[in-house]
Length: 365
Ligand SMILES: [Zn+2]
Image (cartoon, rainbow, N blue to C red; front, side, top):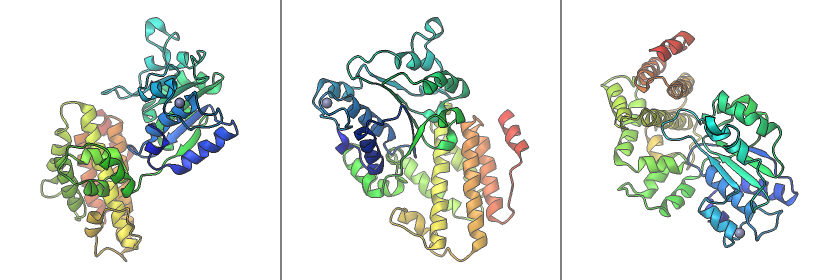
């Protein structure tokens, strides 16, 4: 793999080109942007370029031939450290930062990044899933962030700055990544072997600029659910006609794992937010080729109603709240029930303000 395989993100690439040319690559970066757009791939290619033994030290290009490049392709380079949230865990366990109890501070990222580089002249650590750092994990990282070992680079990969703890945020250089275009998603899908009856063009249009979303939607049931969810949410009362059981049925069909159910509830929220954004775009006439024509078609007669626009904007807030609750381990079923009820109320014009008590109550139930 080389930079030619990293689709999009040209501005970020140029930023690192400039930093490397001036020998001013920082010690800690926070990459933020939606899931599934290639941030980790970018981070890995950046590490490869830095660790490549053939290209100049002040370049992030990789030769893709030398032993270091080959080790990077296999993700076995001894100077690369990778940490991610294990499946089913709510947070990244501190053991991955400071080692297991019996080997505390003698293993883990914070220890390994301080070791002398084996061959690359640099130690590079990539923390995927930085959204899932809890206070304990972030505290483990503090010393490394405050006094980064010489020649070390730490890259945290998350979705937004709001999801990060201030201790991390204040010590990182933030690099923002944008959604891919529909065309970019399609070109990536064309190079993948997805077993799906849904055509790549339709997947790309529905993907919201995210390849991982496209992969989820390649499951026909997911794609069908997206269509019925969009149609139902475009109605004035999203809670009617047994829609709640349809949504919770979709969430429960993820399997027994609660993380998988949470994932589907969050996906439902993402799909809803995109629908509402399409609604607002249709209402304001700000339609763009990046918005799925299917969604825009649901709002062909929208526009001119400022009150309706305010309600739709409120629906986006309610959806973000629902996702926040699910991430905070509220039962997806409870969060979804309240969400659909409040969407209905909001769209009918009974603007609801959520009380903090309700959030606490649901958390306890
Ligand atoms: Zn190389």
